Length: 187
Image 1 (cartoon, helix red, strand yellow):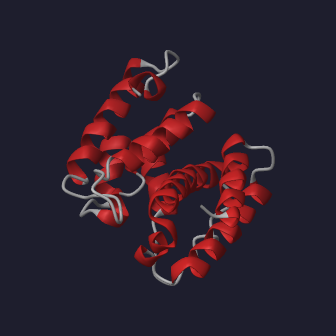
Image 2 (tube, helix red, strand yellow):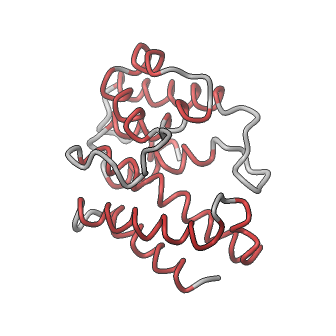
């Protein structure tokens, strides 16, 4: 995975930022596990970053934001801390995809394609994990989500449609669309 997160096109400073972000996210998410599993949580940010690195190898700040995207939401990390260590662009992207009360996830700032790309990679990772769990555990998988099966399906359909409308032809938007269709088919 290191090769995907540190492509040859990166400057030494960009490669160092990725390595620092991996260490930072690993430390901040220590002891956390993926919902309903014993899988260390850090697997998710690494997967998000790998999706972004494959699709957008020329956007190192976006990949760094993928590594850090849940630190504001799920740890005691502050935006100021991210900005001081990783710069204003990374902090802005992470803050843009952080859940806030009373703000629907499909209310993304679609004026910024990188915000939408980051959310698409997050959704691809989450939906892929949900589909794996559905194959293993069946419909009981949906009990771990607020609102249950109908709410989760509606969430991904609406968010997937919003992302596809914003990024037509984008590789992650297309992958998300395929995964949403797989969710409709069921386990």
